[in-house]
Image (tube, rainbow, N blue to C red; front, side, top):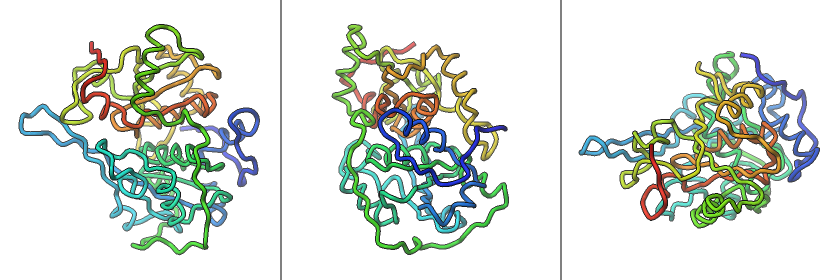
Length: 329
């Protein structure tokens, strides 16, 4: 599969909220195994492998989500020098009643410092190859102001398929003293339930300025309400006015395939009749705020500024619990 071109060196530009710097960052965000191999000593590498599983309850129908960080897979082989990030513990708000909500700036910043992250050193994130955990961490780092974050296309699966060196070590590699100041750079990039309610009201009344698109990144059956997932208490259905753009349409079907080409990304949005306009806003959700970041990354790659993108972190695991408008069919 042919992918967009990669940079040959560490980018010097610090992306701003729009304009040329963000365009440069966008073009250089998705990197190849070859690029990482050549630049390994110049970046901080984070392994964020994880899994989302479904628990079926005794009634045979109710499904709850199980969120797991795959430390054991990291121990069995990772990119040399990579530090492991448990996305369910290290960067999650453990006090929240909604699972795996992103931690606050202080907690997130402390976790990143522990992993060797600094504001002035580029970061490369990767997962097992499905990309959603890597894009989740990419999204979090961008939210909290890191200027240069790269996603390894195809993750550790492609790295191994290309027979590149792996390291087996149970400990986080030692890092020099680093400083990472986490501060929110893009306020719209993470949305909470009260903000979603307000946005939905504006969209329903056609008072949303700029125009806001609500995007459901889940599979069609969940969007239509014929399959219930998200939490055992969740109803089936979707947020009104949402358009369904399943996240699985953005990466290849073979192991380690990674993202589809930029042209194919844009073709997906066109097929789903979702206009890509730089001045529009896009609110994306899934079941737990993870798979939605795949679509957010694709929207950003397609030209939408980060300032106009938002991940509803609680997603259906929060909205579907009741008390909010839901439609199905």
